[in-house]
Length: 309
Image (cartoon, rainbow, N blue to C red; front, side, top):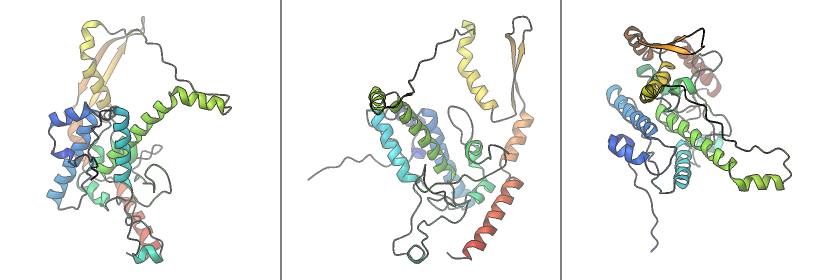
């Protein structure tokens, strides 16, 4: 009898902080403790909304690989993420797929998750989790990264793709939990690309193929840090403040430059409770532009499909 090893299926939302920290120290090096906390928080928040508002929300059973080789663990996590983010398909014998060519089950509304059919518009109106889940490196929220037009800043639903990161654009999006997993997948693939570019074998292969210009990674020179030694212990705290100040107006960091030395001699940090309370209130309110977008898209879809289910 042949035994196949299969990692146990647990939910991150059921793990305590010590368990999450232990997971971050093994397996995929690109999956940090902060990223695991964000994913676990997303799972918990989605389930809380399901219980409180009686909404149907998905259960994303992503659990990181614990393979001892970080590179192999990352590849396993990428493969698992693709499997969990692939749009749901109809049965081969379903009439809508057989006669109308509608292969995917939730490829019909821009505000619907293509994986599980979660109504993201209703979810945002109840609690905008996209604006609460952040990138652990930059501090930007999923709402800023994927649900806002980069030019106008207006609300615009993220468009999912048929093959997750490429392929035909679908008429659907990702719920907050799947959206965070998609964000992590993009970061893991970027890390894979860096490792592949730095591989000496790849450089030789390109030269053999006749490539005249090859990008070679060059390490940057380390600049001398002007921060006094007694203030260096506060750098992690200041880095956290800088990241948070990019996503809220309640934190203001002001630098006073010396006109003679052109250095920042004085730095002040201000916390405004009034702005915090106002932003928290506005975060839970759907914007007029987002509501108009949803109404226009629903009207357009009804005209196109004529009520076919």
